[in-house]
Image 1: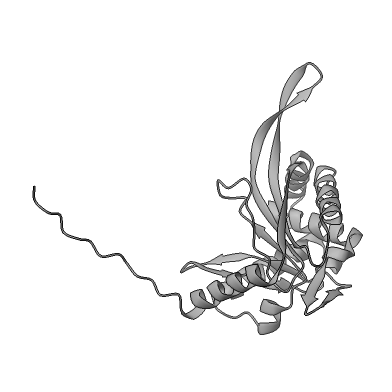
Image 2 (image 1 turned 180 degrees about the vertical axis):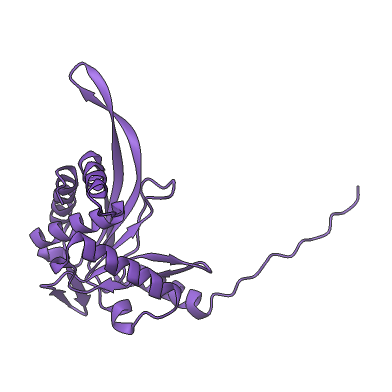
Length: 229
């Protein structure tokens, strides 16, 4: 039997931007007491609103509408909108919403939209697009990269239904959004199909307990299921 040649593995050093991301993710898991709640939300009303807005001349993405729902829910739950600094929890009066952005080269950025609570859905769309464009040209500012109070990570265009996002420390929490899946739901004696999206809230248990975190996620699902622009 002829011996097969040994194929050397490809070595990719964790350095530069990839190395910084690796260090930050490791530090996040070491520093924060992270716990994740999972839920599903019926996307019927939100998708109907998206279609209606498009017919009226306003093209928005599902992510834009979900951002709006998250912001509205954060206003009702200010105890999850902020940062943990040392032995103190600093809650924010503004929603500086971080948006996770996948970049070429296996890189990731999560810059913040400052004052997102005062923006319309169209303004959120414009702000998100601006962040994506500048992230891809390496033009994000240090405050944008470090100043968020809550982050969303959207994998809705992939096959991932639910996942466990890592907190963008020192923030208190991050929301992971999975793909929508057509799901049979009982309606009287029959079954109907509805699109349900997976939502995963990872939070720092040092700053907020499981019950209020669950209340936030429950209210977010209700906001999505009763969505109105």
